[in-house]
Image (cartoon, rainbow, N blue to C red; front, side):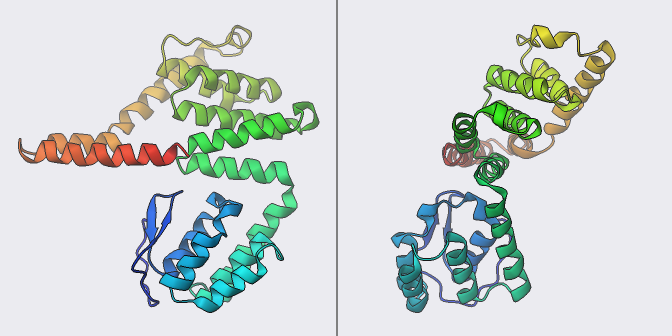
Amino acid sequence: MGNLILTKSHKAGSPYFAEKLGINIYTGEELSYFIYNYYMLLDDDFLEDRLFNFIERELEMSDLSAKLRKWRGRVSYEELLLVILQDIHYYGSKELTDFYARLESMSREGTEYVIKEKADYLVNMGHSYEGLRLYDRLQAGKSEKNMPAHFAAAIHYNKAVALARIYANRGAMREFSRAYALEKDEKSLKSMVFLTCLEPGLALPEDIEDDVTEEQRAAWQLEYEDIKNRALFQGKALEADSAMELDDIKRPQRMEQLLEAWKAEYVRCQG
């Protein structure tokens, strides 16, 4: 999970597989960490028999499993998540209070805001396709004219970011332009210029061309080139570059490992 977790509870012989992150969970502490930090990835079907069986049989916490089965459908989803965290005792009272406050805040925001927040979270976690499905659901479920302009613009902008991340640049340009039509902000203009740098055959919409000054275009193109150059020294590009420096025996082995890891990440992010 990217962090070291010191565990003291029973370790499962058969782990719980968390599809959203593509990881196995072996202990109660790891389950608590997953819920506490990635609750935005969880759907209603998370609190189902597969999880309850894991808690009962693998973590040997039959009382907690029985409690969850008894109260499923009778109390809120948020309360059941809190019950799990409370019974495992990985987090202290202040952290549990903060966690429940976050869940309550989400429920008070209204359905549209919760869906958008979850979509944003999914996209930031690399689950662009799942995020896009939620953005589409938002746009189909309520007329845009009935939404606050800032909220509707944010949906279009964030949807554009998700599309750009899966290289659907023309769709991204369309969504950025819709965001700009609702809110004449420089962020959308810059993003559209970046897209033209990323895909030279892609042009700014005609009705927006005159809104970008030559000075802005030149400055943003330079900024784009700087970002592109810096990207060569981090992430997958850096991993591949490091592999190329290995000897003739180790190089193909390392490249094969990287490709397998990248393919697994791609499959996981398809939702």
